[in-house]
Each structure stands twice: as structure tokens, then as C-alpha cells.
Length: 266
Image (cartoon, rainbow, N blue to C red; front, side, top):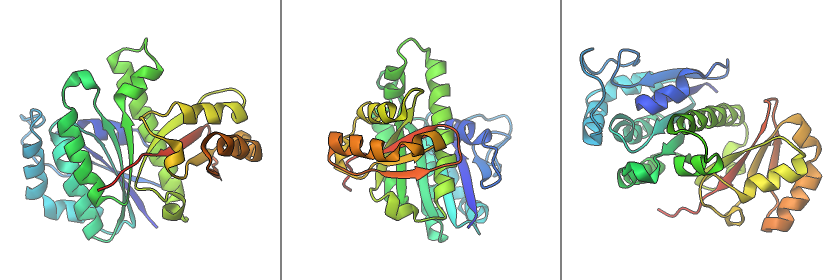
């Protein structure tokens, strides 16, 4: 089943632009010259933070969006929420992909508290969750907390890399029993650092990138070969810590990532 990753807006485009794997096709929807759907004159850049403009543009080009996502069994949408373009366009993109019969997953970044864009971001996220089968969210405040000495630009770059890796891992799993493994509606995630896997995986679950409770639902561990070798020990430790038995999946990708359920009710 073919998978399309769509970068929506400037932040989403930055995430998707550097994906380079044969199992994923990529596309960009933005208000710049690199957009696969030209929407505005070259002299105009962005929506000036106005998400209603982003939404209106997506509505104006809904037919072109339908053509873009047509024929893909899986559509993964990447966006940074809180601005104008991605915030306004991403929900409609998800709606059109689902209406076309695609399974949809969104991978989104939400802004830092000091930016003052939280309400706009979470309003868009709630709408987006309603149109996607699963959502993975990355809170920039939590990324910054994990590396307090980093500059704002370094935090953004780290979040982009995490989102990009998550998209590749999700695409790897979507042709299998993805939705039975990812049984909850919304997840956050954390990368596992170096060290002993049986110690580092539980540590990653204790410090997720978004405030969540692993015991809320089933955690999914997308494990490299080294980590997978210790799956029994890891499972026992996680079960002792949270009361749940995690789903541990072996991946050919380097590194290990833990997907942690976030309580969500519509």
C-alpha cells in the first residue's frame, strides 16, 4: 500500500523535505515556490500567522488536494501548529485524505508556551484529531526541557528530526496491523538514548516529550536489533513500572523510539 507524507506549512515542509526513503512519497503544501500546489504569487510569503487565511487557501484548492492524495492508501500529515498556514490547512488536508479513502496519521509539533500561540495550536489539533485515525504530538516545551542549554533554533531542529524519524517508523508499520498495535487515538514519543536498553527504555517512558501517563494505554516500542534482543527484560521492567505489557516491534532502523499514549476524549 503506497504511503504519502505531506508537509503542511513551513514547519511541516521542513520536516518532510529531508525524508529520503523508497517506501514514502513526499509532497509539500505551502505558500512558497516549493509547494506542489501553487497557491499564491511568488511575491507573497506565508499567511502572516492568520490560520483563517490558511484554511481559506486549502478550501480554494480542495480539488487539487484531492488529486494530490488520490491513490495513496496511507497519508501521513506533518505540521507545526500555532501559525497560519499549517494550522489552517492541516485539518482540511486530513479531511480530504480520509474522504478519499486513505488511512490518515498526523505528526504535529505544538509551540512553546512563551510563543503565546497555544490556544490556536490546540484548537487546530482537536479538529485535526477528529479527521485522522491516529495523531502523534511533539511538544516543543518538552523538547527544550530535555536539553535546557539548547537555543530555540536547536530545539526546532531537534523536534523536526524526531518528527521525521517518527514518520519513517510509522510508514514502516502502516502496512501491517498498525491500528491494532496503536490502539489509542493520540500518542507522544521519546527517543531512547545510548546505554543499556533495559535501563534506557524505561527511562524514556518516565520522561516523555508530552505530559502523559504510560499506564493510560499500551505503549509501543519500535526497537533496533540491539534493543530487541533485550525485549523480555524490557517488557518485565516496563510492566513492573506501569502495569502494562508494551508492544515491542523490531525495526531495521537505527535507534529505538517509544510511543506513549496520551489521554484523549473527543
